[in-house]
Length: 44
Length: 164
Image 1 (cartoon, rainbow over the protein chains, first blue to last red):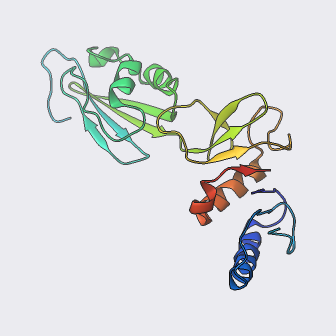
Image 2 (image 1 turned 135 degrees about the vertical axis):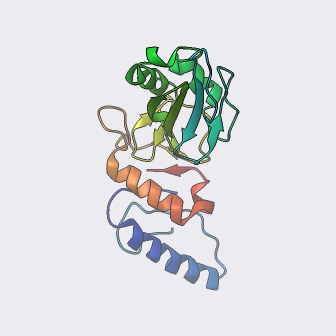
Image 3 (image 1 turned 90 degrees about the vertical axis):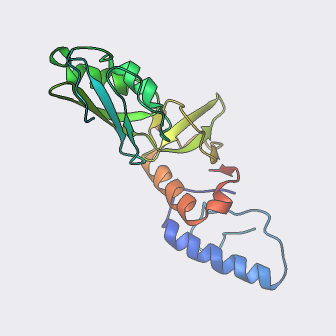
């Protein structure tokens, strides 16, 4: 997991929830959480 | 402290602002142990007012000696007639352990370094980028703020190792 320091953490957490939900629907595991970047590059 | 000592020696009440516990000591005996990370006995001994005459207490000196203890942010000592003293302490709240190339350090909720004391935080930040700390060795405020926000919002994930 990478925390990052740029952007709004609240917004990142919202995006993280959405991305995790989408991955869970596809039954895909979360391997790396990357909060270092804005936008949707949250989980890879 | 309700009781007075004819000899003029002080009993102590140690009150922690962190957990609101109130600890009582009587006539020079050690105060009871509470739930604070820094024991009331340690605070009592560090104050230097053990069995001192209430008129000889210098609150600012006692407070300074107490805040030298690891884990404490501030202290205030109030001498009260006829023979008691109240010690109010604010404990530091550790946010995380920061693991760097050269070692580990503890940081408080504001990101500043604190001396390790009490229960270690169950949260480790691995500093891999070399940018999380400022020139003083403290966590930069934005990093500390993000860390605190994440920890509060995702405690189950925050328990795992994180990296910048």
